[in-house]
Image 1: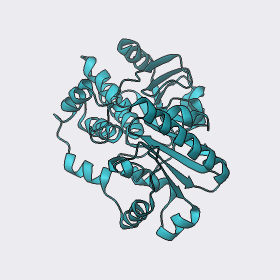
Image 2: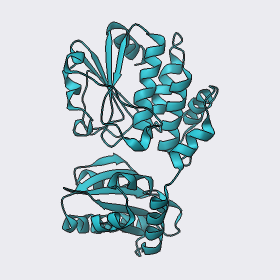
Image 3: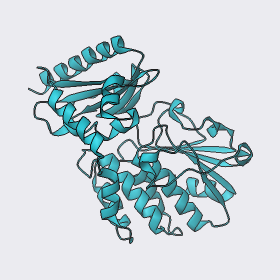
Image 4: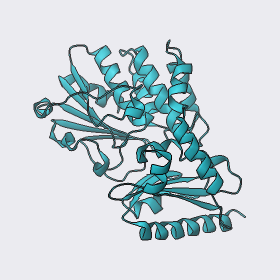
Length: 315
C-alpha cells in the first residue's frame, strides 16, 4: 500500500488533499502534514489543500485557493473521511485519480485506492507511519508538528483506548523534531472565558439516568446567552468523560437549520446509533444530525437503551 501511494504521488504533478467538513486536529494535521511531506520530498510538484478555513485551528495552517483547472490530471487524496457526503469541497471526484486514507469504520467505499486502518488511532498516525516506512522520504519539522497535533487530538492526549504501541512509536519519532510542544498543547487546549462559563453551565445542569446516559441540550438561546458559536462546542464535548456513573452522553447543539448530535462513550457502542441519523464515526465517538427537537428525543431514548443493554451485558 505504501508503495502504491508513493507511486501515485510520483506520477502526478499536481496533488490536491481534502478532508472532512468541520475539521478537527486530526483532519487538518493529516491533511496539511501530508502536504508538507510531499512538498519537501518533491519540490517540483504542486501540492494544494482545500476546504473551509476554521478560525479555531488557524494555528495549524490555512487552506489554499484551489481552482477548477487544478483538478485536471491531478491526484486527489481524501483524508480522515469515512463517507463522501462529509468531504469538504465536492470537487474531489474531478481529478485523474483518487486515494482515500482513513481510520474510521467504512461507510462509503470510494476512491481508486483505499487505505483504511480502523485500528489506527488517527489518520495522522497513518501518515506518520507512511512517511517513516518510505526510506527516501524525510520528515520536515512542520509536518511533524501537524501530525503530532492530529494524534494528540484524536487520542485525547494518549488516553483513549485507540492508543496503541504503534501510536506511541509514531509519536516518539515525531517528537524527535524540534517543534514547540508546549505551545502546541496551549493552542489545542486553551479555553476562552465564554466557553469556560458554558462548561460550568453544563456541569451544573447535567443529570445521569439509571442506565448511565447523559443528555446535554444546547439551544440557540443558551448559546447566545454565553456568546458561544455552535462550532465551538466541539471543544467541550469530552468534559463528561471523568464523571462517575456516566457510560455515554450526547450533546444536542442547535444550529440554524438542524441540531448537531455529538455522541461520546466510555463503553457502549454509539456509532451505529449515529448512522441511523445521517451520521457515523468511531464506536465510542460519533456524530449525527437531528431535524428538530422531537427527533432528539428519539436519539435520547435510543442512547438510554444502548446504555441499558451495555449495563446488563457487563454486570
